Image (tube, rainbow, N blue to C red; front, side):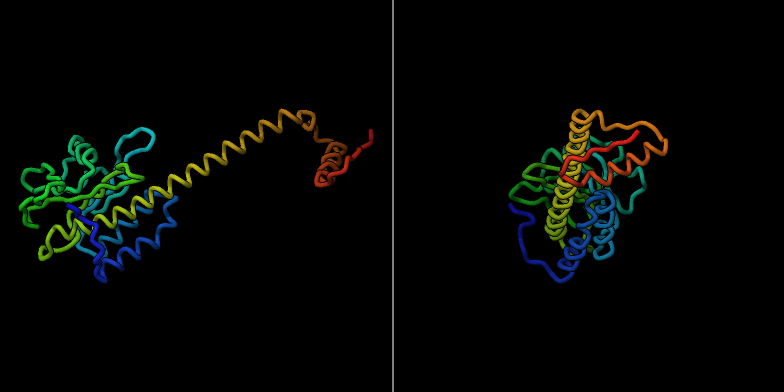
Length: 231
């Protein structure tokens, strides 16, 4: 069953997606961008609590990158702060889920028949964040819409928001990789130049040395050979 591939969006949802797309330039500071994204969702819809959990690409560990309506050490909506096993299970399944307020056990929405729950029975819901076909994290909220709208609609629109989060993460990783490549390239050039031109190091602060440095700097752009003379 496809939970959020429908493309029928209402005016309010289009407005939210447009506002989120406007902050994609902040993706260089990923946590800040995700915090702004949750604020947009909260201001425009009925979300009171939300969290973005991402997997560290190097260590594979999960961390809360942004949250709304939670204490600094708070857990995602509907989850116990110490129940990392549930969070890990949610991430491993890569399926949308709802968490009933009583059992606190996630019910995954990969079945043909959805769970028979009323909106008021749900403590939290969420969707996976997919990056290049692999799970990158989870977007978890208490709700997006009020009691009068079925929770399936929340899941549907959460999927669109999660797709945008995946684009934020992808852009951030690309920029970081580019920066690291340039840093390594710069370091390699420095090492290469220092190995080829060890005699260009001039030590001293006398007037004659300073004048020699100025002449070298002046002649450096020229392709012709330059002879400096003096005592």
